Every structure is written in C-alpha cells, then in structure tokens.
Amino acid sequence: MSDEIHSYAQLQQQIHDALRVQHPDWIEPNGNCPTCASYESRLAELLGLPHRTNSGCGDKLSGLIRV
Image 1: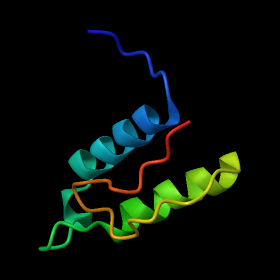
Image 2: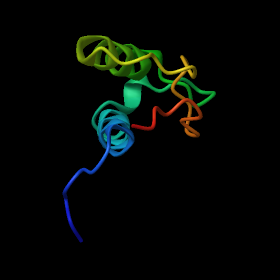
Image 3: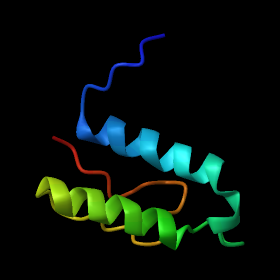
Image 4: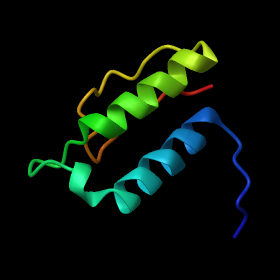
C-alpha cells in the first residue's frame, strides 16, 4: 500500500479521516463534524481552492474537490 497522495481529493479524505479518528468528540450524533469542516474549509482557503459544499462534514464527503 502506497502512502502517496495523488490529488487534493485524496489529501482532503486523509485529513477528514484523521481528524475524525483523533477527535471523536467533535462528531455530532448525526455524524456531522463542523470543526472538521472548518479545518477543511480553511485549508482550501489557504490553497486558493473553492470550498466544499458539505459544510457539516458528514461521512459522504459529497463536496470533494477534484483537481
């Protein structure tokens, strides 16, 4: 298994998963994680990318940005 990241979407998924594992207390009963969404949004802003549309940061990651 390779740990290489080939796209922003893969990086975003890796960060998303790591935040949820490291901070389960951030996850709301409905599965949303506003703090995770905030971190992901800030990263996109710093990289000059459009923001995700799924602001609740649920499990589906429907707003992944493909580059």
